[in-house]
Length: 351
Image (cartoon, rainbow, N blue to C red; front, top):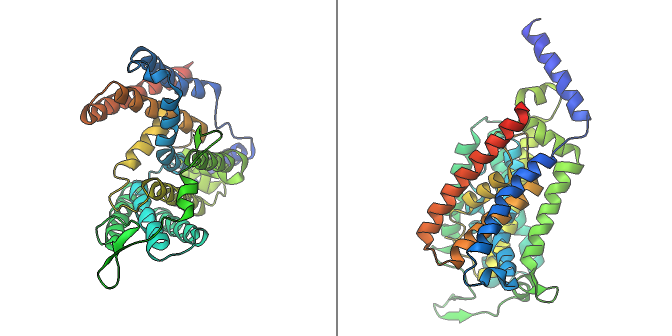
């Protein structure tokens, strides 16, 4: 059999796989993701911070705290499924927060128009990254690293290196204060009897959208196909370039959503916000069990990973660990969890 015939046969087999229902989440993968979460919850029960872990406000606060990172993790899930990575989401978040604050606080734009503008800007940043990855064939790590630096620099340029708040210097040099837009209070409020923040509902909405794309659309199969085997997906007729551009565009879109939520929570646009958020988003995806090599995972697993990382940091915080020690412990536990999940995957595959 010639190489061309072998490639064609491989493409045909992959085409059959695309036409079959995609098995994106399995019981075993969900169980593997739930095990670290169960261990972290057990730690919280043992080291409860003088009973604070058993109070509802602790869990309510946790859901609010992980929401912005979780929104980023939704986009990161889609990118990692294609065997890519997006290091720019934290900087795009900062840029979106600055632009949203500038438009609503300093320019007086209405919230709907400003939101559309910011979402379009974030999506455009993702499209730019996707085009370089898909058509220029530049490694995703390099492309998104460059976008990370560019977006952060642009955020500082637009804000003059300062936080954009409702208190600023006017044209005559005198400091003026503008009232906080009504939208800020609406997005940062709590609903359902004061138990759930609106930003948490936004996070769940982003997760739902990601789930629909990955599990209920043909495009979702394309995303998994590209991550599973790039060349076989191409031979099967998958629009590989367009699929990759979509993945990074969706990641940029979610980064813009997270930037708006961040600006509302902080009531300002800070060009320094979002530092390291991309690492938290990657950690949530990996802790859930989505494979960094692509082709396997799902947003349901990412939700579990977000809770795992959030509860881990909350338990360490309740027990008065320093920020430095919390970072070190989180990193060590993350590596241990990934190695453990990898071992379970290997054992299940061999079985």
